[in-house]
Length: 193
View 1: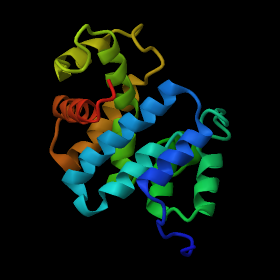
View 2 (view 1 turned 90 degrees about the horizontal axis):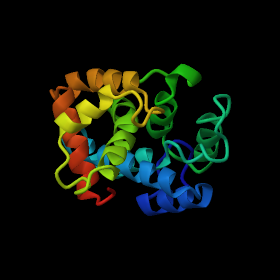
View 3 (view 1 turned 30 degrees about the vertical axis):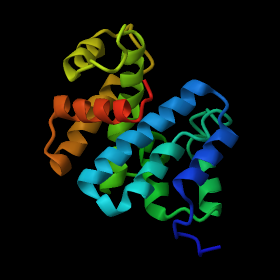
């Protein structure tokens, strides 16, 4: 095995690990959607690292089903991933997506992107599920309208979606509507909704 801190895990191995730890189909779709969005942002910000970014998306919540408490998630998962040799940037991105609980700041483009797409990817899937044509005709304007309806997908943090878009904008130049469109396209291309 490579020394700790060296990424020696593939997307396929990450997906297998996620499936081993997660039985809930909705949670699996969420992680796949986040991974798709991460892959899309990697093409803009770090094309040579697209696989690593997708891995961060696939594994960011993989411990949530077994360890949902704020004291455990994502710390338990990160300890396990550390033992597998995932690199520090991926681990810090996963910790940073829950910085209010972990104290790990989002400083890298990867960590900022993971936070920016996490809640949004789930919200996009929820929006697509209530549309007769699914995601095929979903646009940012529809997502933004649904964001104003606090009863729709009430568990999704609108504050995190807004903060994530704001954190990511200096890196991408995309305002919130363009960020939403980019994530819709990624989820649509991955055929997840």
